[in-house]
Image (cartoon, rainbow, N blue to C red; front, side, top):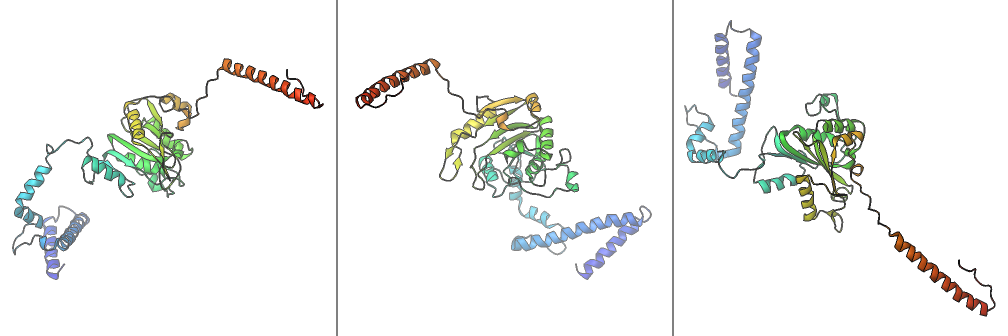
Length: 352
C-alpha cells in the first residue's frame, strides 16, 4: 500500500469514527474496523494474485472506472455468462442418482476417478455427501488428544485407540454423510471384534442402527497387505432392525501374485446387498437381538458358518465295504498259509 493509499485510508477511518461518535465506544469501533481492514487486506492480495496468475487476460480498468475487475469481466463476456447460467440450471442435463461423493482418504484418487467416470461429475466442496467411500491405511497410528475428544466428529462416540485409527477414519467420513446417504469403507477385520475403545464405538454405531452391512472379502486382494479385509456399509437412516452379513472370502480368482474378484463375484455381492438375500454359508440377516447377545461382536464367523459341510456317510454302504474287506482278508490269509505249510514255516493266525 502506497503512502497516498495509507493517508486516504486513515482519512476514511477517521470519517467513519466521527460519524459513529457517541453511537459506540472505542473498543467496539476497533473490533469492527479491524475486521474490515482484514477483509480489505485479503481483497487487495487476492486482486494482486489474480492479476499475476491471469496476466494479459486480467480485466484492466480505465482511469476513473470504479467497477470491480469481476464486474468488468461480466460486462466484457456476456456470452460466457449466459452459457454458465444455462449450465447451472437444475433442469439442464440428465438427472443424477448422486449429487456428491466424498473419499476422505483418496490416496491416488482411484475411487473418486471411478465415480467421476460413472457420474461425469467434477470435484466440488460440500458440507455433506450422498456417498462416502474410503480405503484408508489399515491400523494407522495417530495422536488422539483432549481437543479431538470434543470434536463434533468423535464427541458422541469416543476416540479410536492410538494404535489403530480405523474408527477415526470411519467416524470422520460418517460425520459428512447426508441423512439419506450411504457410506462404504474398507477396513481390516479387527474393527469387527477388537475390544476397548473400538468396542465402545462399534456398540454405539450398532445401537443407533447405523451399521447396515458387513462384507467379508478374500485375503491378498491388495498389493500393500495380504490380510483379509471387510467392507462396512453405514447409513444414518437404516430401516431394517438387522445387519446383513456377506461372506465373500471364498469367492475369488487366484492370480500370480494376488487374488482378484471376478465380475461374477462382484455382481453376487451387489445383488445380495441390494436385495438383502440370504444364502447358506454366504449371506445372512442377523437380528440386533442376536448381535447384542454376542456383545456386539461382528466377527463374521459368529453368524455365518465358514466350516466345510460334513459329508453324509452311508452306513449301509460302509458296512458292506467292511464285510467285503473281511472276506478278502480271510481268503488272502488262507492262501498265504498254504504256502507257509509247504515250506514248513509257522502259519499266520487265523482271521476271525
